[in-house]
Length: 233
Image (tube, rainbow, N blue to C red; front, side, top):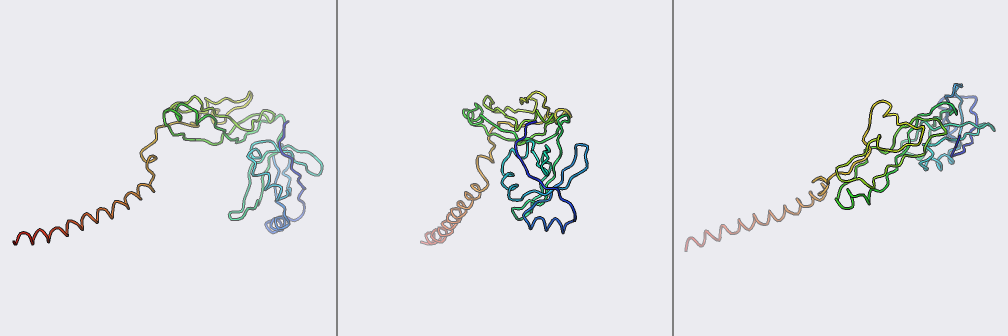
């Protein structure tokens, strides 16, 4: 089984609850739970600073991790990360055990290429709309791809790619397709009128037109007395 990241995890025994979790966080640790794989859940602690470094890497979310728990290796995938709403702090992590013979269901990123050189953008002036940025796949751990490539180099304006148009490695399925949902992924379309002129530009134009209209009205008012005097001669 191919793994991409190594994590040292310590078993978390003894006191439980919110108070114990707060004390762990103050000491630079992150409480975590490892579950699944026909085994009982295991409470763990991870190093906070190491996690912050790893979580900036997109691959950390879509590959199999290697946990070192008291010298024993365990393959796992990341299922959930709880973050502090205001601080750059990880509050809790959920990890799922991985077995060689059990399929995993996981969200992986879509990588788009060739859009700038496609006929629809380069020669026809189309606009690209990304309708999905990640997709859920089902496969054995050994077949799990890190990402799915979306080749847009031949797309023309008015065209769309769906999940069924994408190439997957052997043994990998899109979960949506197994449920009969062929979701749209990306399209190239004509620019709309509101895209050609942004709301900010429209507001600026209206503001500029208002003083000019006021000046024209003022000139008309000044011209009326002059005309009246001329009529008395």
